[in-house]
Image 1 (cartoon, each protein chain N blue to C red):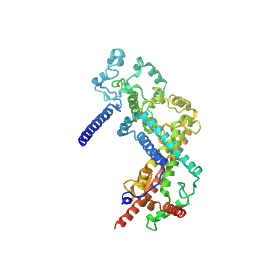
Image 2 (spheres, each protein chain N blue to C red):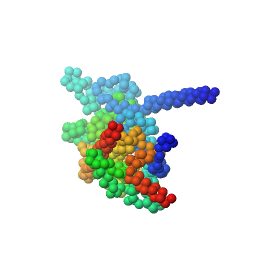
Image 3 (cartoon, rainbow over the protein chains, first blue to last red):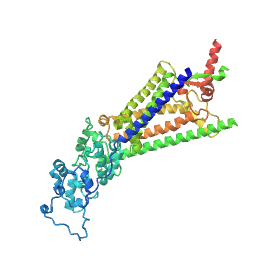
Image 4 (cartoon, helix red, strand yellow):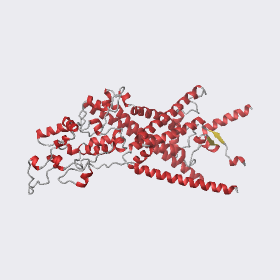
Length: 293
Length: 238
């Protein structure tokens, strides 16, 4: 009798265990799928052709073409010559007058005009040729007017932003992703961590070479930051072309020296003890096998 | 017959040390996992595990929580050293002590000779030099891990004391020492304690506190001899 009840009990237990395990797996799978993963695709470029299906889903989808582009009557422009060599080959981003964005995005446009990218644009106009990093960006270089989605989360926007900024500022993107901020923000989607514009300012795009402006950026999250806090190097890559501050360059050298020293120390210690342990194991095994003989 | 079934065992570890060892194992493991997940966060699997932990914020707090507990464990070890000296009135330079001494250097030399088949295995005392190294590596290593970790935890405060780029250096030190700790504990400590042919598959004395007579005689012959001498003396007195 008793053994029978015990058997039933164990059967019940195994059933419960199975149920628990399957529900656990199901829960894990749910977690996995619900874990929102933002597409890191760069905003598709503006070309002479617009994919209207995609356009309708975008943030600007409700706008009519002429609301931004105007009509030929308004702009008093002729249709470009179809037989010209550069027909459909001129870069739309360089031709389009992005001032029409100002109609709706007034604050962003004003900030852009005060910022570094607009400054670079002015320099480009006076010198007549693009700088080392390429053309000075206008709205369309970073934002896709036709395909940008609305209502993205902070982390989704941030991920796309890192890619967008990274197309010109590649070293900065790499060093940001190697830094704690980038890992938490971009890789793990932690929306309390800082993305590019959280420090450099949306649309103003300050270079933060000046310590005081850099500190104001730090203070947005690190409320107790003192003046020395701005000397922490976020983009600590050796190849960082933006690093023109001499004291920062000198301290970066020390950072890399100490990094190399600690790496050498780790390798030396590990090599010694791995050899020691490995040889000792072989010796002991040898001893044991000899004893068995 | 009875004696054959249950081999004679000796008490090797105090219950406090067994508990502390468990505390340190648990916290060390969680620290290593949560820390390296941040480093490898570029990979999808790391992101998945972090999401299981409750996101980056929760993983960060788990890391800090475990760090505090691990350091409390380390502090109790330091207090134990004082207790050992002051209350138990033991000698730091004595053979029972975990503090490294002259004998460890000669032991190491002799052990290296033994490895290359040029002599007998050294007569280890209560703690061999490798065990002492594990212990002090952990105890001292965790001090610098603690300091660099605190710097990374409170950069605002530390930037007021030390130059800003020291925080960058602290970040690198923290990472490389973590690599060293995990690769040392995971390979050297594990194989010396568990993988050694006579011990394999598992060394249980740090969990049960007991060691069998044969292994006691073989691995800690120095201590065994002293133990026998004490036993003889007490026997004579009786």
